[in-house]
Length: 77
Image (cartoon, one colour):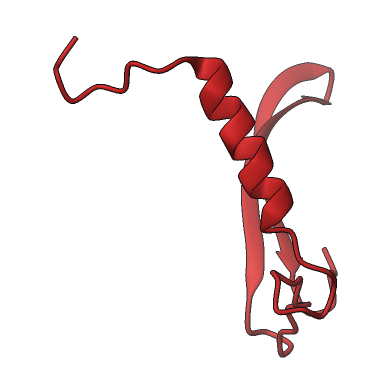
């Protein structure tokens, strides 16, 4: 172990973190963190994902590749 390492215990760090967390809590509206709803113009952003789907075509098993797109503004698929 290097000389610079902390040689205290895990419990003392955990107690300090819990005390610090409690002391730094703020009431809503007191300048704490906030959730801001993201609004997007139509066509400004989308989410994209892809998958492989096992399907049957004319009685034969087939692995199809599918693209999934969702528009963020309207949440339309």
